[in-house]
Image (cartoon, rainbow, N blue to C red; front, top):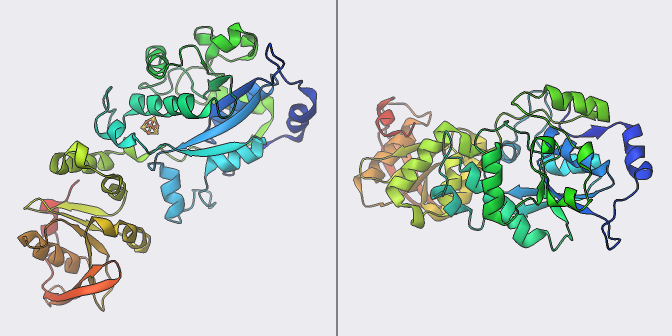
Length: 374
Ligand code: SF4
């Protein structure tokens, strides 16, 4: 298995020459805007539409919380040794369909911190998130791309929070997309959509897949001639992660929803987090990659680092006149390789510029756990 989509040459030929384009009443090619991740389900959804002669444009929504994207930035590799990539971009290339990565961060903070329909098992506001994404596509993209309807790779019952009939209906209602979303993998189990009613989509060529397993999708992939596709990377976004959830809840408690910035929530993806006794915050990088990525968050506070010793870059967020600041320096020294019973030179930096240096005794190992957010 690779980390991209590969289709059989026969399927490629079929798509490029055998399938006549489907036209609307005005003779325009019928076009679908496909919510595309690059994974198997949305790939199959795109293929099922293309095999009906429907023109497909893929859109991949960027919220800043994609796990694969984070792993790619950290330089991690997949279990098979290949590098993480933007799977939507490489997948769409494999399918030979255009793809657009769309930044939907605007307005997403409210979705995240005050979701109308609540969080899932962690801080994943899946229903609100889908409303945000589909709503964005409906308002900003459909007209721009001349799309007749939206399509998704959803499978009935695969995700209990969003892929059940009732939630699908609710999401369509709240986005003004009632009966305008085609779900080629499970449309046979759902209501008739307007695209089907108008003859843009042939319902008999759509599927009725349901459940959490992937057997039916794998069988369909084989039948259609999909030779390779990315394996699931283990969760799709940070917001379903329990540890991330604890950090976000802590941030909401200490900062309050409306005051929270994107930097506040993105930095929660990195390092160990400590809420110090007086309410200030320390983030400790866990490795070189995290130290490097932490540097981007210099607007949130100042950095602490031990001079002349291996150790983390730490980000202190809060009041430098409080006792927490001295404690943060002791924690910084504790995570460095300086001897535990000797004072270490802890530097305070604004971006790369050293502002001060303080000789500091490392905190005894384990004492920092009293303030760790975990
Ligand atoms: S898992 Fe993440 S990206 Fe997917 S719907 Fe839920 S919040 Fe949105």
